[in-house]
Image (cartoon, rainbow, N blue to C red):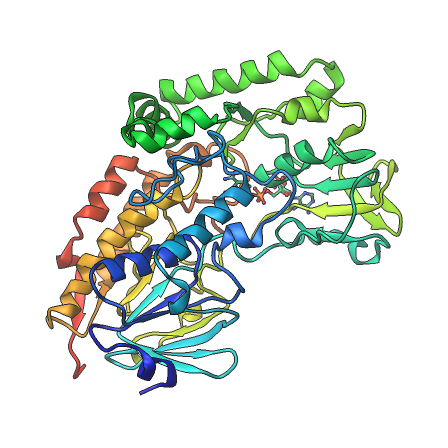
Length: 496
Ligand code: NAP
């Protein structure tokens, strides 16, 4: 038996959980609730919270309402606002780790290098040479965890500090500085909105204009919080009430049907927000997108339009030629002198569990299996990789939803499959090639009808330009996760 497994209580199947973010912690809590404590969480960082530990940039907030971005079993009456800040969300996950005493199960600063299936177990090796062995491999590694620094000529020659948004260097003072922000996704927009309040100048480098949905600004008072504490049904109202249903239903219907009235409504709201709040005709032309709202991931903001119209802000919509020692040179020759550059150019969304090396049945290398692009049956399991559970895997419902809700549904699905092993019906399970191929064919076809395929570029698109996200309704996702089709699974025996 391996070193870490030997020290663990042997009361159940052993789960090896990779990642102590939202979904890794969820798995741990759900196992503990069942009385199963034979698991370890491996976490490459030094604390819990995943994306909320890695991203600490100014203006960081979650554009999913805080009361819906909360575990269903651990409401938080103390959220300070309808949309919570990144700091507050990180504190929430820290408090959950305390409440469920999770840290004793977590090996911090420990990155898994490889995982190999041996016919009955996964054998993992950490980058520092420790080993572990367990029947179930839970990949809770997140989607947006490999930052991409755009390949902009000269960036490395910039003489001031520069960093990716997910590696924010808080030792760099920003007050009174001239800061360039490259990228106008959800991250760049939040950062610009925050920086104009303290910097001498903010230049926002926008390659593609974005539609912006106006977001609600509502701080919760002490009275609000007391009311939530006294009566959790008030939180239920925010999570499940007609307004929440309307919001989610409108959005999901809109994204899966480009011709829907719901998408037209979203388009109208974004256009009105734009017309009402952007006044200068030159700026208007730079900021007006030439594709449908929600084609790229929808940006929610209450303050970006105001921020970019401040006297110390400038929207640069031209093409960057190169970065020079003192700033950024545009293709038309314009030069922006800068002290600091924040690179907000997103993440490599094709990685998923990688760079870990994963070997499934008969030593099959996941990199080889995914050579033409990552895929997973219903976004959660992969043929020939027994008992490997992917949270938010390829083609999952990422986007403007609460990923916590989604992960909870995925756990419900996983636990029903793991029961097959618990009950001795199989040593391993994985989806059949046929079921996976059928899923992918239906999914790819359906994805072509989504707004994501309506003529813009975004991180939702795979290498073939097909949106690699859930193309059906949220209700269908719930239905599928509640009711696994066991007949689609291959069951392996210990002798296999
Ligand atoms: P992103 O959406 O991928 O945006 C990257 C930005 O960088 C885009 O504006 C892109 O322009 C630009 N870019 C890329 N390469 C460039 C280059 N070579 N030169 C100039 N510009 C370049 O990344 P993100 O903003 O970090 O957001 C990623 C995801 O994180 C979001 O979609 C969301 O899922 C999540 N997020 C969520 C929240 C939240 O509130 N819940 C907040 C922040 C982020 P193009 O548009 O032209 O490609």
